[in-house]
Amino acid sequence: MLFKDVLGLEHIKKHLVTTADSGRVAHAQLFIGPEGSGTLPMALAYAQYLLCGNSGGENEGDNIACNAKCNSLTHPDLHFAFPVSNSDKVKSHAVSDHYLQDWRQFINEQPYGNLFDWYRLIGIEKKQGQIGVDEAQDVVKKLSLKSYEGGYKIVVIWMAEKMNISAANKLLKLIEEPPEKTVLILIAEEEEQIINTILSRCQILHFPPLAQNDISTELIKKGAPENEALSIAHEAHGNFNKALDLLNNDSEDLVFERWFVQWVRSAFKAKGNKAAIQELILWSDEVAKTGREVQKQFLNYCLTMMRQALLLNYKADSLVYAKMHLEGFDLGKFAPFVHENNIQDIVEELEKAIFHVERNGNSKIIFTDLSIKLTRLLHAKAA
Image 1 (cartoon, rainbow, N blue to C red):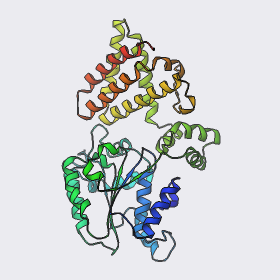
Image 2: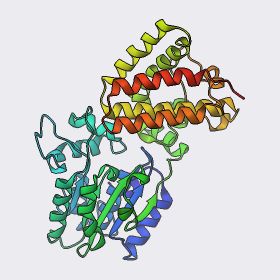
Image 3: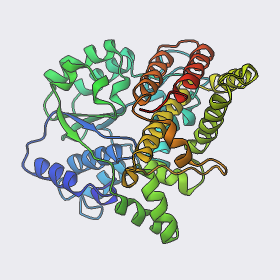
Image 4: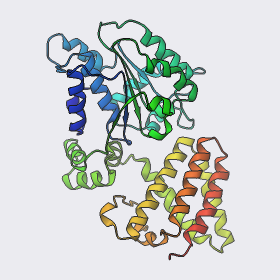
């Protein structure tokens, strides 16, 4: 992937090209940005720029073969590490090399895809993947070897926050004292989940959400009518992966919206109505049957919707980008129930639920407890 293929982010492209051309390439770099902001495509373009010479063109002499290998993700000096888990395909000690063919498919089809898209592709959507110590040992071994083509050796570690402590400690020495012409590019969405000893040894580059205009322009190129492209780009809020999902009516947010509306309606009915409690329990059962990554995504969706409702309630309409697709539910009518007297408690309960899901708590108990608390909180009076 060349820099010209990466959507927007011109200032970041310029920075990376300048550092590469001047020979000031940091051996450990951390790209941090929200989902769909282009961190992975940018890392791939940067790796290709380093490996294939500073011209980066596809038709420039000796670079043709190098670019072809990078485009097909088969360059012998380009390595990858990403979250995996045991599956029907890999029974034990799963590492990235077991899933390289799937990874190439993922990059080809969804370079802006999220972690759940990846888990779904390799059939582990009901598990929590990780970058473990076996993976770290593989990375250390690969980078200890000489470069095949005499230039850089590069490893791209995607979703680096999924690295467990053992893996992080294993890679720490490599990050501190890397072999010559070795570059580690770590990619993460949540900076606070990466241990400080790793953070302090990386050159950090923060990615903003993509510009609305860049997303709408790209959607129009893909055949979307201009009005639809503008509407989707606004709703996507800088997330190109979400924009593509909305364009193809394949967004998990559409499922989350149905769950959210059902949940909120049941919570309102449950106040003083014992029979409605059963609806909340049945709802909790439905969500609890899904995988933990789906549950975490849904809870994060709920956090977003509560914050958007609060903004609507306080007339900050220019900051509201969420759009409800389900007929019969108006976020504006729900907004007055989210206010200064309950928003902090609502956010706290949702974040606690995410914490417990991540630590393999009983999902049915987590969501039932959360539902009962939501019933109480939504009926709290505004000041």
